[in-house]
Each structure stands twice: as structure tokens, then as C-alpha cells.
Length: 356
Figure 1 (tube, helix red, strand yellow):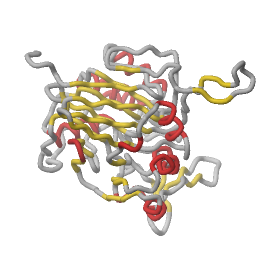
Figure 2 (cartoon, one colour):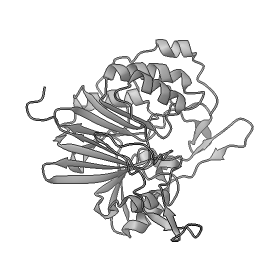
Figure 3 (spheres, one colour):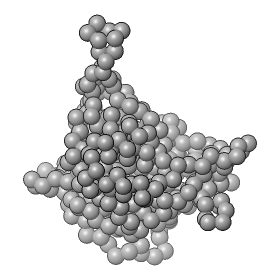
Figure 4 (cartoon, helix red, strand yellow):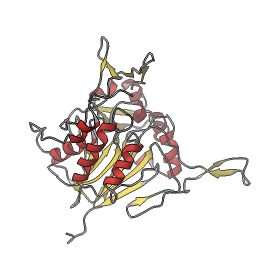
């Protein structure tokens, strides 16, 4: 993924989000919720020494124990699995009613299940699963999920293009074809597959964006080595059209947007969420921003500038964001930026009655 798009850093830095030339769709009436909790079950890093803070709960060493004969007593602290993948448990509460969705499942068959068990997460309480897109590092944990749940029916919402065959045609190689999801295999494991291309509301008032409108000048998508099979041959797949995000409207405070990889462009995703809902305040942005590597470095500065103007109260770039983008975002949004780590729970509540 080392090729760029032919755009210099200066050109990218001068770019700015443009106004979309047409409405995406009629606004979606997203109900306000009293609280949203986002627990990261799979991500690229785990740091047991990070402290908790207001609205940010870290598991520290409270992750169970595992057999280890070299220690007196025969066991050690287990820790949590980190891998190049993403999965988040999202719980929304309105009054006394709550709904929990799983957003993505990580890369390996067992990391999601292992981390859920070590954190004491009740997978049996899930109301559904949503996939951000079909890449294997977001869809690899279904085996472990099925093991924890058994073969009970569970709705799985995906974009119809999630089954697309894809590969990385890297220089000097024969191409690395990625694992492709099988609808039949998922259904045999008890998942009730629901394909939705357009925005849709699911239980609890959580909005799935569906296809994201691409409106910025600087978010160009994936570079040429990322390819998809069109039935007759491999073609450049810049858009990853199945990329979608979750959106929750917290009462009196604004939108919480959760991305998987952000292949549509994280600024595109936020602006799309605002257009869909009619809500112009971004409360929090959590997930992968896909700004890692030479092909995406020109996109970092305009992304940081655009997100600074949006002024979220919380920003947690994880997974594929990359260290250069992390530094830029931490510098641009020092009061909002929080370091990501597996097992962390972010809690965002409604505005207090009478608050300004």
C-alpha cells in the first residue's frame, strides 16, 4: 500500500470539504438517547497502564488469570488480546430500556471471544451485529462469537457488497487475495443476514449510515494496489463502497460516530451523518480513521483541520489511524483526544437538565 494518489502534501493541505451538490436522502429522524457506552473488544493495542478518567474506564489488570507454571501459584494475569482488527460493543440507553449491538468482530477467530470472556462481557445480551465492511480484519471473529452464543438466531446487518472478493496487488508480489466472507457459512452458524444499502435505524435508535457520500476533495479512498474482482478481472477498488458507520444522537449533546476503518474518509462520514440526521454537533468520534502509511499521509493535515473545526468533545482514533495521524490529531485536539486501548469503555451521557 505504498503508492500515493499523485497528490502532493501541499495540494492536500489546501483542500477543504466542499458542500455536497445534492441531498443524500430525506433526513432520518434519529431518536435521542440518554447514554451510549462503547467498549473496545478488539483493536491494535492494549496498554494496561493507562489510567481511567471521567467517561473513560480502563480495565488495567482486572482481566482474569490464566495457567502459567513458572509462577508460584501456577497462574498469571491474562491481559487482553491486541491485533490488527477492530470490534466494539455499543450499548445505548433510553430511560430504563437499553440495546446492545456488536460493531465488527476483529481479525482472528478467537480474539473477540477471549477478550469478551476476560472482560466479563455478556455476549448473550446482544441484540444484533453490524459489519462496517467486508475486510477480514473486521469480520474474522464470528467463530468465537458463535462459540459464546451457540447457534441462536442473531441479526447481522451488512452492505450487499460485503461479499466482494478483494486483493492487495503489491509491487513485486503475485497479489495477496484477502479472505472473502461466505453468507452461507454465516447463516449456518445461526446469523440472520440482513443486507441494507441505504441508511437504516436499528434497535435502540442506532443509525447505520449505509453508503457514505464522498464530498471532500482530499479523501481519495484506497490506492491502486487495493483491488476487487468484477466477475472478469481485478480492478482498482478505491471506494470500498460497503464502508459504513454507526451514529447515535445523545440527548442535548450531539452525535457519536463510530467507524470501522473509515474507508469513505472520516470527514466524509461525519458530514454524511450530520446531513442524514440534521444534527450539526459532533460529540464523539471513535474508531479507525485509515490514515496510516505513505498513501494517506497527505490526507492527515486536512483531516486534522476539518475535525478541529468540527470540535468534538471526544476523539478516539484507533486501529488503522497510524502513529503520524495520532500525533497530528492529539496536537490539534488536545482536550478531546484520548489514547485507544483494548478493553476501554467510553461513556457519554445526556446533557444535564438546565445545562447551557
